[in-house]
Length: 310
Length: 262
Image (cartoon, rainbow over all chains, first blue to last red; front, side):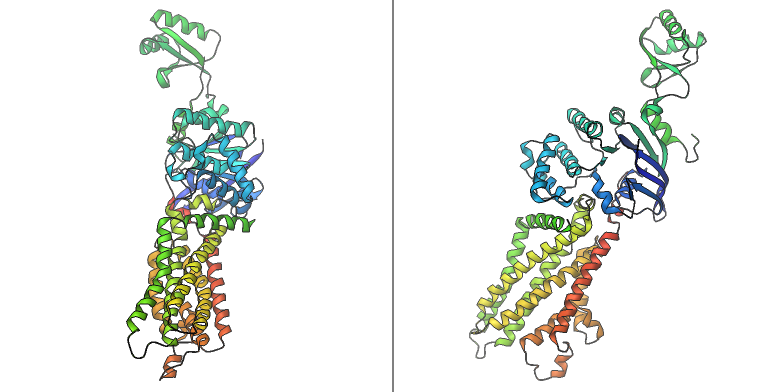
């Protein structure tokens, strides 16, 4: 895969506060999620990428363009959907998107055609002719999404695209993001707090905490645990079952959502678990290879000290 | 491409000008000089020596290229950055190619269109009420001064708006009171750096006003001929202010103060 965004030791200070601390990253095509607790430096990183903020030190490039030097070219390649409401008051939805296209090089008529096309893709109907001030949260999200997309940029930076959406709208938004990445070949940097969204669409994850990169890898690689194990879910007294497993000589530990993790991956292990379950009088709901959950990955990463120790 | 984007900004700014509050401001600014001229005319209608061309010229100069131009550009140009920052639309505009440059240029042109239309309409209305046979010369002079004052004040307030986005209106009022109204009247080198001084000089040179009983005292407040030099200075002043505003808006990190929770 090609590295579309490459950052090398990027540091950003606001006075004495260090918002980004020697951030080095490579972001490839596909969907990359940018995660981190509040104040982690996500917004700062996005603004540095967009040229809205200058890095205090370090270098980076977006496609073939140097950060801080080729801001205009970078902005032509990037569609940015901000988290906050940002619309031009007094304009209708379609006019807002049209202006976005005009500000990105298109003539008025072509900009209008694109605005309609992209609003169709975003599932916005006749409400596009209403002034933006009358829009609901979901409609404003769609509008911001359309504004980011209208000039057909190869890279999309989406800041909290699903926040405030109801479940069906959220699913639609995630589907659109997947279509753009998988079918239209766009690189998407998804900045969100909603971990199930990340799990649903992301190819890779970057976790920032205290301005530093804690995790940056493909999601499928991150999901593989350090040691092989099985994840067991039972119907019945899970604690008693856990004790029985220990008495049977197995190495076990409680997992998330009532699951039990049993270390090891030899052929007889599943059979042993079934036998213990029969003896304990519990029903086995599922036995599967353990995967690190995103929640575990996230919590481990943000709890880690800057020197790498938990 | 820049022209197209500037046109887009000009278009949406013009659309914003069609809100009720802005239309009311336009009407108030347009009618105010005519109202004052009408009141002066009524007040002087029964006196033995009604005002001649000179006082009427001074009234129109004070009302149109000074008051209407200054107030109109103050209202429109000063909050160009702060309004977008407060409305959180700055990021939306700034992340577009040439973003901040076209935003400033488009808004500058929209300011000129809005204020010039108001100033010219107000001049025509007020001039129609001036009780002189030949008011054409006065109108010509004031019109030329208006065409110079609007771009200059718009550029000045635009620069103040980019330098001090958080307190732009307060700073602009303070600047106007201190520099344009007080410092411009100080007969020293410093007053030559004000828009007011240049406009006043051009008004004096173009309208052939008599210097009164103490010409030296009057000359201390205006510059020397030729007039074209003052026009060149004013146009250069306008360009420098505009370029400085564009430079600042390109280099400044406006979004830093807005850092959210990420």
